[in-house]
Length: 120
Length: 152
Image (cartoon, rainbow over all chains, first blue to last red):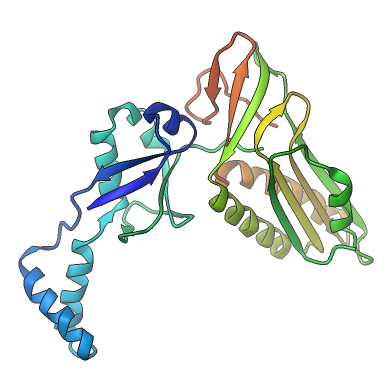
């Protein structure tokens, strides 16, 4: 998935952009069940998920369409080497909230790279 | 008299204290306290010409609101005001103003320190120094070799 990441302070200066597009290979747990899971999702339109298998497959699909913060950080480091020194001390915010490295980023969420802050 | 418990604002003009003072007035208050952070000219050996602040505006507002609400809860404040200025802030002008009122003074003293310490760690606002030698530098605590100790 492609994720737009807002840039601030030194990160904005280093990349020369207010926001960068990052290609993240999300969905490491995904795969084989995808097709089946999509069927389940279609079935969900007419009927609510009733068994745990369906719920599990739906979860797989969701994972396939999202990436973790950790995966995003790795992709940022690879695709924007200019940020490498700054990245280890940065945090990620999704929809204006700080999130942990395991958090999954939903498609369409607003993602921001937050370097160490210096207000006051 | 202050009508709401907490008031938070980001401004891009000089911080005007007088209207803010009224926001923390309360007949049950025995203490009003203010902290005003001002832009300093010297950092170690370096001399600053001016400072520039930027923020992730929506998130900064949200974090400041959270901070204000937590301070009201944790320190039993009657009112709290937090105003941060963005854009260029010339030397010796206020970049941040925090005001608290409480029934007794210990809560206000403690809250002011806690609010400023937390603001400096959590709120997505950054300052950029323009030094007199023409160099500019974003201040990112932990990363700047010569700007350690930049503090308001």
